Image (cartoon, rainbow, N blue to C red):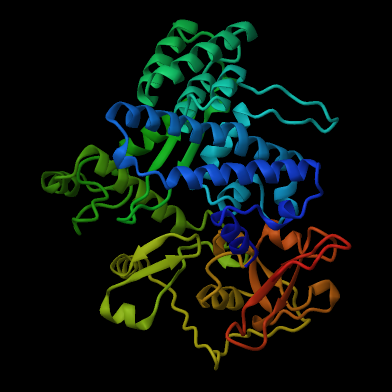
Length: 479
C-alpha cells in the first residue's frame, strides 16, 4: 500500500510525502522542488504534438531526450542509490540487500546489471567518512553526462575485469580511459571486439595471467527460464574445471550414449556400456554434439541425485527434485508444476521423471490433514519433513513469505510466525511460514527489524503479515 501510494504521487507529478512536508530551505525541500520542476517539464513535454516537429528537429530531439534520460539515471538516480547504500537504507527499509532494493523498490528489470554499473561508476563513502573516487573515473564521467548506456558500460567492464592483475596501475588507468572512449563511439559488440585487441596487446602471450586472475574470473550462472521453460548456462571455467568437463563429456556424450529419445540407448559412461549396444544406438543417433553434451549433463545429474552422494536432507527437505502439482493436472497430463527451487516443469516431464526414478508420493489434504504429524507444539523446534512438504504445497509456500523476497522454498527456513520459538512459539503447521535466512534473522523488536503475525480472520486467514518496525516517534509502518 505504501509503495503504491508513493507511485501514485510520482505519477501525479507530486513529491512523496516525506519530501513534500520538508522544512523550507532544507536539503529535503531542495530535492523536492527540483523533482517537482522536473516532473512539470516532463508533463509539458509529453503534451507537445510531436507530429508537427520537423524531421531534422525530431531526430535531434530524440537523441537529446535519450541523453537526458541516461543522464537522469546516471547523474541523479545512481547517486541517490549510492547514498542510500552508504546509509544502509535498503536493509533498514526491509530489503534483503541493495540489489533487492533496486529490483523490488525501484522496479528496475535487471538489478544485478544496474548494480554492477553503479559499483563501477559510483563514488562511495568509507566507514571512516572518506569519499572514494569511482573505480572507473572516465567511464563515470560519461555516465553522469548521459553519453553511454548501461549495455555499453557492462561491455567495457567485461574487458577491464579481464586485464591481468600483473599489469601496472598506470596501464590499467590508461586502458579504462581508452575503453570508456570506445563506449561513447561504438556499440557493445564493437566494444567487446576492440577490448579483445586491447587484451591481446597487454598480454600477447598470456604470461601475465596468473592462477589468481583465473580464480577471480571463474563463474557459472544458471539463467532464468524463458517462455519455453529453457534455461541458459553462462560459464567461465578455469583450466581444471574445463579439463574435468572434457573428460566427463568424452565418456558420457559419445554418439549413442544417454539418448533420452532412444529407449535402447545405454545410460552412464561409455566405459560401462556394451560396445555392440553402443554401436547400434550410435547408428540411430541424430543428435548434434551440443545436444549430446546436454543429454550427458542431464544423465550425470540424475545419477548424482540417485547415488546419495549429496546427503539425505537439506533444510529439512530430501535431496531430490520435489514438485507440487494437482491430481487434475496429472490425470490430464497438462499444466505446469513447480519445484522447491522455483523451476517450472511441464506435467509431461514430471510424469517422465517419476516413471524413470521411482517417485515418492505425498498427498496434501487441506482442512483434514493426513496422519503425518503436522502439530509438534514445543516438542521440536525444527520443522519436520511433513511440515516442509505441506508448507511447499500450500498457496504461500513456494518462496519466502517476506514482502518482495523471491527466494524459493529450497532456500528458506521455517519461521515461527505467530510467536517466536524463544518466546514460547509452537512448531505447528498453522504457525509456520517459509522465510529466507536474511528475513528470518531480521525478525525482532528493534527498529529496522520485522514483526510477524498469523492472520486469523478475513480473506487472508492463514497467511502471515510482516511489519517493518518503525523508529521511535515515527508512524507505524503498514503490514
